[in-house]
Length: 118
Image (cartoon, rainbow, N blue to C red; front, top):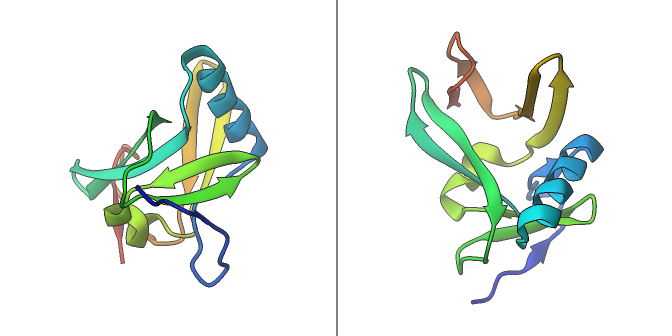
């Protein structure tokens, strides 16, 4: 398996805000892991949803980026849809969730669970 860490500005990856990185570190301290895995899956009324979790291992086709001192592993099939995305973590009242600022999104469903890319 030959994944490599990328930092090419012509090929933007996925970045974490400090709150998102802190949350990922909490999960990794509790459960271990290599870094944050970012993928997409078909779902919802707009077509795609983010699929994130702690990566246990790197896949041969993963794109690996460094952000906030953590590895962010992106499935190759998701790269075109998530390139340039910033992942944030918010805690507002009872809501605690990752939020995505994705420059590729052209539409979202009303409930915010799925998105369409252009």
